[in-house]
Image 1 (tube, protein in one colour):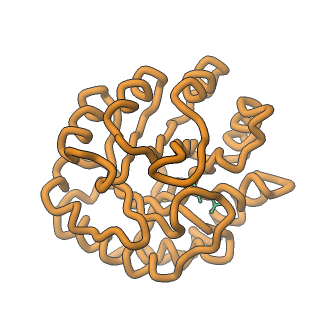
Image 2 (cartoon, rainbow, N blue to C red):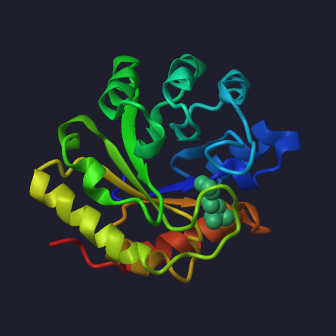
Image 3 (spheres, rainbow, N blue to C red):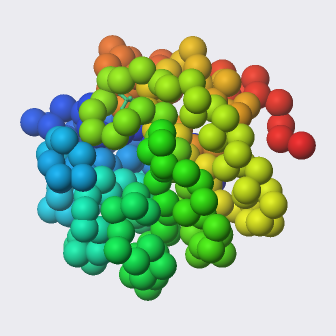
Length: 227
Ligand SMILES: O=C(CO)[C@H](O)[C@H](O)COP(=O)(O)O
C-alpha cells in the first residue's frame, strides 16, 4: 500500500448505480472504499447496512472496504459486515458497551479494527488498546452528513493522535481523517499527521473523478516526509 490512501466515501455516490459508481472511482485511482453506516440513533441519518456491502462484493468490487459504523449498539452489526466482505471496521468507542470486546470481535473475524473520534471525543479511549487497533479515525465534522466544512481543530487532534502512534511504537497504525477533506486542505491535513483521507463530496461531486484524485495526490506529493 502507498504512504497515503485516498478513500472516497460512498455516502456521496450515486446510489441508483452504486456498483458502477464505485467501479468508476476505483478506476480513477482511489485506494479504498469508505462505507458509512448510519442508524438514525447514534447519528441523525440513515444509510446502508451489510447487504449493500455484500452487493458491492457480488458486483465484483475487490478493493478494500472500510466500514465506519455510526451505530449504537455496535457489536450486533460486526458479524454481518465481516460476512459481507468488509476489510476494515471502525466504531465510536462511546457507542460500545465494551470497547475491547468490540475490537476483538472485529479482529477474530479477520478484519482490521479501529476507533473513531468525534470532534469532542477525547483521545484517552486509546489508552489501553493501542496494541489492538489497526486504525484511528479522526472526524473533522460531526458525523451524520456529507458536505460539511472541515473543523480546523481536527488538525491539533491529528497531531496528538500521530504523537500517540509514535510513542506506542505501532507506526503501522493508519491515521484516517473524515469530513470536509478537499484539494485545498489535504496537504495541511497530511502535514498534521493523517495518512488516509476520506473524501465524499469532493470526489463524487467532481465532473472528473480521476482529475480530482490526481489533484489530491499532487498536493500529497508536496508533503515533507515525516521525521
Ligand atoms: O462520515 C461521514 C459523515 O458522517 C462522511 O464520510 C464524511 O462527512 C465525508 O463527506 P464529505 O467529504 O462530503 O465531508
